[in-house]
Length: 195
Image (cartoon, rainbow, N blue to C red):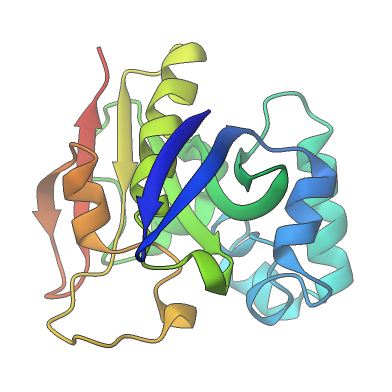
């Protein structure tokens, strides 16, 4: 638990830890995040995702929660879930293999951060950077040595949060990530070595 200052106010109790189903569903809301995705976009092929319903995505993510290692972390402020970060071994995200921009850079075993969802009232408070720090600790705990992310790097001063679900490059830089590859002007691949 840490004390933090954000957007001109002090946020007393931030706790970031392994996700639980109830916290995850509260963050996702009744629609299941963006368009009923339930954070399954990278966990399914494009064909599977295009054919899926929100209910199917929800059921698949629920099954993923039941497998053991949580598929991400939840940030809570004063006990209330306010943020989600998806973090898992890269092989859990098969859709990346077919992405021209985000396909694997090398054969090094990495854990990937593929999604953020932060409650509107807690955006622009630095919460994603703190979530990235927590993700690094989480990955270390499970024996991972490399953490990778795919943030947005845009010159726009205002960018719709719905399109920034992979995070912003500045949050990653503040959390100690370095750019290792860029196949698109706005989508770097960034890594942080953990050992």
